[in-house]
Image: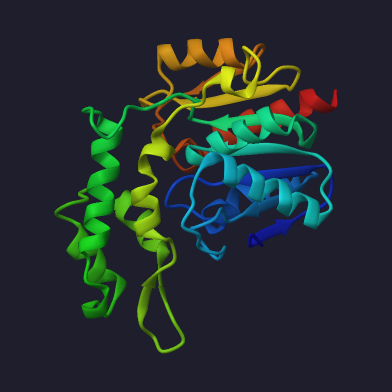
Length: 273
């Protein structure tokens, strides 16, 4: 699969992997700042997202394989891999299965754990099912403006910032007709996989990752990396450093960009020290 990617800057390679419903466009401000500090920053769109191709299979195994293939096509032998949410799980799988490709690992508010199944009550499951149901129900053939789309989504998705983030996926074709730039049917079908965890023993060793410097940047108000998830991280990735950003939820890079950049840059400086 030929992934689309935005690449900027010069220096040691840093690859950023976006989360569910995201794309490379969401990370341009962070990418430019990291490039200015002396890095080649690469932000690919994962399969079924952004400008990358759609495919009926959507698992962490194949997404990690996509990134490895893209790195080889791009000539990147090794890179620091930064992943947010779903992208963080892709990054974790990549580091576990292809450790020579990963110089260091940065997880943005995610742990490689299972966040409940669709048969169980979970705020994460409810949130994503509500989002996907609302997006599927939106009759984009009758939508003429983004403002109309946002108003139509408001009853099901009351948070305006979330609506605006999701609507970045609503694009116009050459005829001016709206279409979704993410593969909603496949992503909804793959939701159990996306919310699922990673069993270290399935990869042949008790730890997911050994010998790779690692950092997790979590939001103080987020439920994705709580006490139990931090314990799992420390067991599965020995030596991982965990940094908590105050007044931030799951979207740590968007809610506290200054603190997020500082945490990433300090970690990168320590790598080069």
